[in-house]
Image (tube, rainbow, N blue to C red; front, side):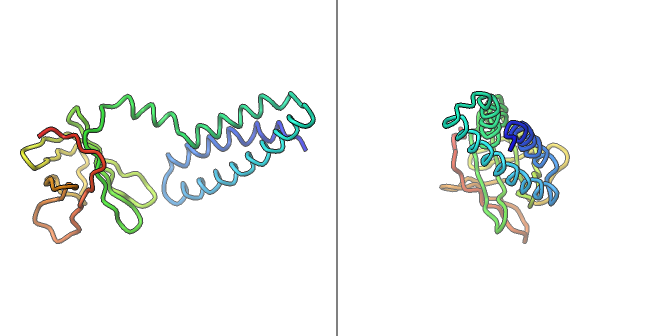
Length: 184
């Protein structure tokens, strides 16, 4: 069995399909993520066999393919690109989430006065951006276009949550806060 070509094929394939699935979203993205799991398992098995050959048969030609496989694992598991991107943004002063049956809506208020609202859409990332103002115990969200229809733009601080206020018979989000450094 030729391990090097298998590792050199499945390492970039795992990475590429992983990021493509995040970009595509929806059912197609879900099936692509299932493919990533299959590619990852194949890569792990090939890497373990390669590691055994390296240790017991002293096949030093497998060092570079194994390093390539390890880099692929690292990028998929730890997602350094996303972490670096998040570090370049303004720090989060408040993070809240509202659990639903299948998904969770979330709200990030940043120190620079901007916010990100994740609508918690099933199998996709429906994220809205804008700016916010804090007025006593109320947060007012000013959405950029498009404006979502599933959240009110006024939220009220409570002990451990931000609660939507407004006249609506629809579900009112109660964003439980895990980070709250908002200066009133």
